[in-house]
Figure: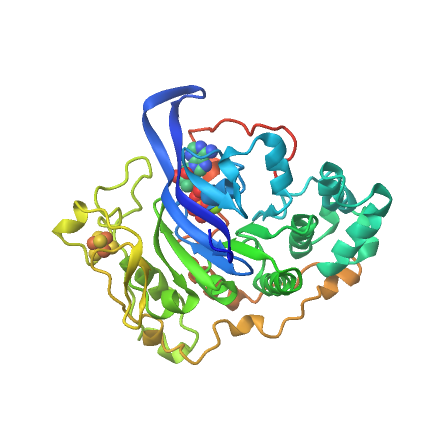
Length: 410
Ligand SMILES: Nc1ncnc2c1ncn2[C@@H]1O[C@H](COP(=O)(O)OP(=O)(O)OP(=O)(O)O)[C@@H](O)[C@H]1O
Ligand code: SF4
Ligand SMILES: [Mg+2]
């Protein structure tokens, strides 16, 4: 593995057995949540992962931390063959790869103080900070994420959503990991607070040299923060390239359709942009279409597409080449047709201060988000709902419990 690559996924699969009732596997079909995904993460970069709800983003994120055992595939993290490590070795490696979840309301234990929550990784990895120095270490972390160190004894409910996400991030970086997997870390937050958290993440990346895998629905957030972007569809990665390649010369029809749904910043241009409307529902991941699995919804599909399964390989994009899984890949300028070429990728994030001033006030809550901005924002999300989704809410299928009962993140 090249030196600049810190994480390399090779042909990862995660299939969940479909169970009849609670326990019995039907033995017939599997939900193919992740179905042959390969990519690499470079040191210090942010790799954004986008795709519609249910396409396997969170499953992939959990696999990267081995919170899920793979059905097949290999994962190399900083020289370690992750899936062949025993639990002791795995615990040592987890110091260097951590996760931040979407929902700051449910991912923090309400009965623990912020000090206990952020300090928990130090209890598990006792050699990192000596016991006597833990309070100070936690206070430093609070300060680093823009929270008041004096609030160390408060409980999660005493913080706003944005502040709670900062607590989640502080916990995620407590052990000074090399990689942070961020699964929709700002999707549950108001727009103004999203910007603060994104700015904080960029600041931490610069200061601590972190690499991020940043999973999100929101294409403009992903564009703002990512160096490279992977687009997922039905358990597969269908396009992978630099931010510029994906947003300015996408070659996969699915990416082009997603981009065409991004709202136009200039109101006079609204209605003039090209919009590619995808027809049909997302097929079931238990029974993906033959050939190219996007063919049932693709506006360019031809006969061959239902037979041949296109590989994710370099294909010409008009300037050079980048990875795309389309048999008829060709660049189509989507962003320029909506005339945002001269707009900063995301000007909304330019002016917000990193420090959450509210944290230093009296239990201050987040600012109410501007309603119009929120409406526009929800349009910019992948899929129709723009909701904070969790496909796991309505599962008929349950996977085996994690092997360890304690919090598996640390
Ligand atoms: N533990 C599980 N058991 C069975 N099926 C699962 C499990 N976890 C996820 N799935 C299924 O795998 C598929 C991918 O789910 P996943 O949560 O990874 O999608 P996602 O892209 O993160 O979606 P969202 O955007 O809604 O968060 C879905 O069909 C989901 O129902
Ligand atoms: S291979 Fe065919 S169906 Fe698949 S994305 Fe390309 S044109 Fe569409
Ligand atoms: Mg998810």
